[in-house]
Amino acid sequence: MKKTLLLAVLIGFSTIYGFSQTKYGVRAGLNISNMDFTPDATFNNQHRNGFMIGFFGQYDLSKGVKLAPELQFSSEGGKDESIRLDYIQLPVYFKFRLSEKLQIGLGPQAGIKVHEYEDGFRNFAYSGVGGIEFKVSHQLFVDVRYTYGLNNILDEVESFEARNTNIQFGFGYKF
Image 1 (cartoon, rainbow, N blue to C red):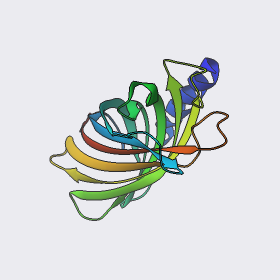
Image 2: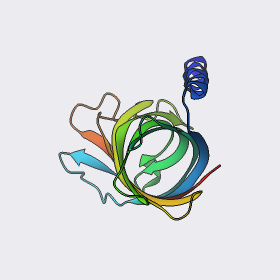
Image 3: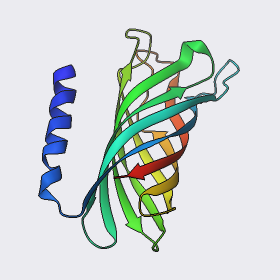
């Protein structure tokens, strides 16, 4: 699994040199996350406040469209210790320019759970991401993103399904 992740990162960064107008940067922020249970949880399901940090490459595909693959650490799950989950995530984020300072974005995201294994949660999570970004200067930006899980993250539990939900308030710096 570690070799697969390393290979994916190397392939991703090797394609960087094929694009013009490439920028790199770092991004960090606050997560407000929880799990969406079906049927509803039988316990007090409270949100978890956490953090995220990562780095990205941004490539101009055209004047109004950018591709921004990222690698980030994100603390997610619920407030209760038994449902706290941390991930290394690989979002592939497409940004669409609305104005000089405003962009919207969306894309898929894959995550690999870190820390504990065989804890009742699947090791991989897949999500959809959407958000809005405001450019403060040529290098600084702030953004808000919403992530919703596309797969059941509970491992071998037939009576419940759970999906990650997450709101990220981030800021970043482009080099």
